[in-house]
Length: 140
Image (tube, rainbow, N blue to C red; front, side):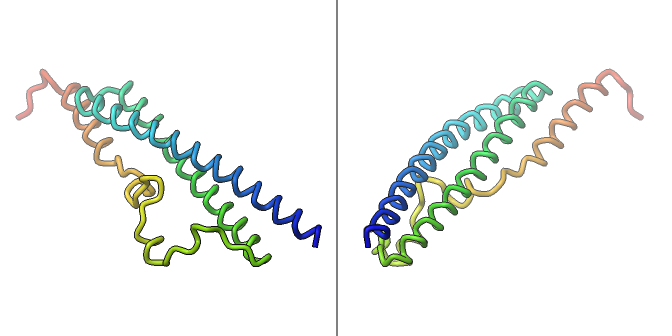
């Protein structure tokens, strides 16, 4: 019994630790998301390779953070399942499935979870650079 109590205590400690890491990653994600928006605005206003590089840099960081957020959520799920094996359920698990499925976790919606499609933006940048390179050329 004492061994099981220790194991449950360790699981709860791990859950709190992983949850704190998850919340920190979510905060970082929203900070980077603001940088992505700013970089996209700069790219739209002045299509240049430096603005494209900045945009791609923030997109890469954003995608990496989202991957890590998903991994933390998976870890939390596994830890909670381990806790269930001991017959322990957390307070927030008493919500109905419908409430859980319809809720927005930490303000991250389905659009935030998906990768940003910036292929159209990249092609418009190419067109802008082509137009700049072709200025002054006479086309029949």
